[in-house]
Length: 107
Image 1 (cartoon, rainbow, N blue to C red):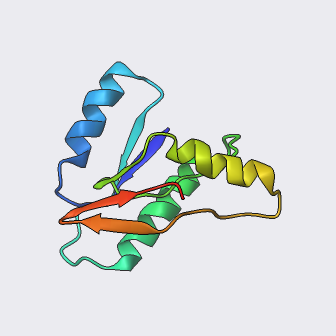
Image 2: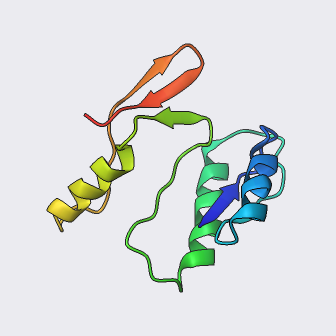
């Protein structure tokens, strides 16, 4: 698993490094810190992560921000949608915001 830190200072690196020390299959790929926040940074981070795994066999790639939460079974729900319709290439769900926390639900 490759987790790309997009250069933010939200503590992602510390959290990932803590888990990576325990689970060798987790890898942190850190992008350089950016002064400006814009969508291009997310695209650059995604592309860097994809470049890191492009030669590794995979069935799905997940892109999400580290400051969201989702219901138990969310990825099972999404992967089930992909498995059920081979023409799908992208899946997601509507989101709702509770104060400053974004919660994603499988619906």
